[in-house]
Structure formats: C-alpha cells, structure tokens
Image 1 (cartoon, rainbow, N blue to C red):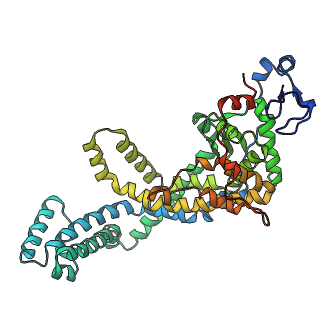
Image 2 (image 1 turned 120 degrees about the horizontal axis):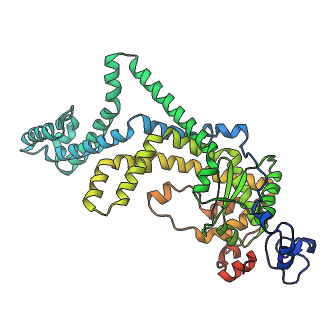
Image 3 (image 1 turned 180 degrees about the vertical axis):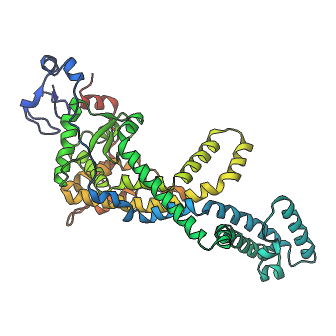
Length: 436
C-alpha cells in the first residue's frame, strides 16, 4: 500500500509515516485501477493554470541588488571595454619590450627600429617612446621593462577607450552625447525585449530544456505543497511548478515558473519540511524578481553575451591546438571582460540574493526545513579554487547559509548528522516512489 499524497510505502500502517496522511487517503494498487481517474481520463488531466507573474515591485529588481551587475554589463558591452583591454595588453607588451632595451647604449636605435616595425605591421597613433615614462627610458633592464609595461598598458588602453569619443567631438561637440544616448537607449530596449521574450515564451523554453508539468500524483502532493508554502509567504497567485527528470538535485525559479528536479525530491527523501524549505527559497527568488533581473542583464549585454558564447564554443569545440590559440588571441579580451569584470559583479549580487531568499524562507517559518535540505545537500558542494570558482560563484558557501538559518538559543553540532547521511540506493528510491 502506498500514500496517495507522497507515494511512500505504508507497510500496513494506518497513518503515513512520511506526511501523516490518514488511512482514508490510502489506496491499494487494485483500488487505484478501479477508480474513475484511471485509464483515458488520467491522460487528459491538467493542473490548474496559474499565470505566475511576480508582484509589480519585482519588475524593477534590477534597480536594487542587481544594479551593479546591470551597470557593469551595460558599460562593458556598449563602451568599448573589450577593445580597450585588447589595446592595453598590446601596449603592455610594446612598453615592456621598449622599457627593457632602453637605458642601454643600444636603446635609441632599438626604439627607432621597434617603432618602424610597429608602423609596418601594427600601426598605432603613438610610438614606443611615447608609451614609456622617463624613469623607464633612463633605467632600462628589468625595472624599465616593468615600468614600460605598466605605462604602455595604461596609456594605450585609455587611448583606445577615449579616442572614439574624441573623434566624434572633433566632428561635432553634440555627437558624443547623441551616440551615448543612442547606445543607452539600445541597451534598455534589448533588456526590455529579452524580459518580454523570457516571460512570454518561458513555458516552451523550459519544455525544450527538459521540464514538464506535474502528473496527477505529483500535483496532489507537490502542487498542494507549493500552494501551502506560498500562502505562508502571503503569495496569492504562485507560479506554476514544473518537474525535470534530472538526477542531480536542482531547483530554480524562473520568471513564471519554479522548476524542481526529481533528483532533488529523491535526495531529500520526500521530507515535506525540507522540500517546503526549498520551495520557499525559490518562491522568495521569484517574488524578489531575481529571474527577471537575470533576463534583463542578459538583454542589455546581449552583443557581449553572444560574442562570448561564440568564443567559448569555438575554443571548446575544436581539437586543433593552433586554431584554439588563434581564437584565444583574437577573442581573449571578450572572455576576460566577461569572466573578470561582468560575471564577478553579477555573482556578488547573486550571493546577496541567496542570503535574502534564505531570510525570506526563514521569516515564513520554513527555516528549519531549508536548513535540513541544505545540510542534506552539502555533500554536493565541491571545493572552490581559482578565480572562476571563487569570484564567479553564484551561491555562498553552504556552511555560511546554514549559519544564518540557525534558530536563536539553539545549539547546533559541528558534525551535522543530516550532512553525513549517504545518498539512498536505487531500491530505497523506488520504494519511496511506489514504483515496481
């Protein structure tokens, strides 16, 4: 016998040990086959439709926690930051070479020949001597090379960043302002259009990504659980809940949907309080407008985002080392702009949003359940080493999230038993699901 609410095996019990449902809601497999809902009627089942739109204040979420990420994405995309980084690297190389050879008896002749070589192969509006500070010309050697690299990178990078606006100003003093306003308007339009597309076509996009609607059995349990959690958070019209068959425990909020994986349900062993805590956390993201802010930032940085995806796929999709080196030499400034500037700023805002969503779940009375879920999922967290893992991490360390979810006046052990439980085996999973 199995529970109709959560699917747990009853083993003759009159009350479900998992969710506490009375025996009146319990049925045997034979009784299920005789119910009118079986057969063709079950195939026509559809959950209640909900528009799932966030509250009005969520649509301006990019003006709150995500404002630094929006500004960084817009500036780096529309104001020549990748090109400035490319020229800064070239200036650092030229200035380093020029600073190293200067200060010696062959310095003047080497600088002249280096200038002619650059004029033939890599013409610049400045000469190598212009990139060097006075100290680099006089000292030379290692110190002169270091000074020349710093000075050359700064001067050529700044020149690449400001020269387009200077040329526009020389043509007409109004042109720089007109071009700047036009670029800002274009960025705002792309951001708005991306949000509209995400909201309007989110259902098909999630379907293509592998999400599906809840079945009748899942909706009676998870759907009702979502409604209960939403009511505890004063959410009258919650988003629709979708399921994925991914074995990895995942849950995330979209603009009109909340998606949870079967791996998350199994990993939490159908613990209603833990799953309710996860749903409360995702509903908090949805109510704050974090998915809308993510779509907005992707839109205002759409050219940079597309170019970064092309560069990443070209570099990772070819096995030819020379072609990889060529792609990195041409597109490295785009990769550095995204991974070194845009993504870390966005990640910092995302980590603050995670803490805020945890606090909202705690305030709604789901802090203990969320803490149990995080403790149970903590073994999935890998170590963080390097720039990308540390600066671009979208979630804080789980232990720091657990710390903020501790109830006042209660002592918590260092070795949390929930975090040390081994993942269940396949037989135990199928017994929970009521599958053969």
